Length: 122
Image 1 (cartoon, rainbow, N blue to C red):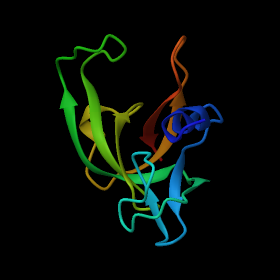
Image 2 (image 1 turned 180 degrees about the horizontal axis):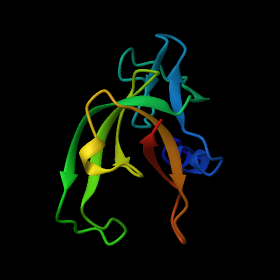
Image 3 (image 1 turned 90 degrees about the vertical axis):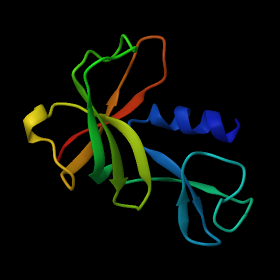
């Protein structure tokens, strides 16, 4: 299984896994053949805590994606492990969202598609 498919396959476990470079001790996202920090080719896969904080966000009021009915929150979440992930924030009133808010991962299982990681207030 190649590195791109491994990311999506591991989401089926209900946990977020990312590549980790033992040579420079950094996580790698998005999945790739080599570490973008030190060019090491031997990358491991490690489970993450699934916890983080909102780094930035926007409220989407017009959507081209039928899965997501506006308004919804699209955010950049900084995981506790240091990686930033673009995602949706769910189960959070629009007036409650704020930068720095602690969040935790939630997997959405979509029929006919891979699991999708989103985040909810922690």
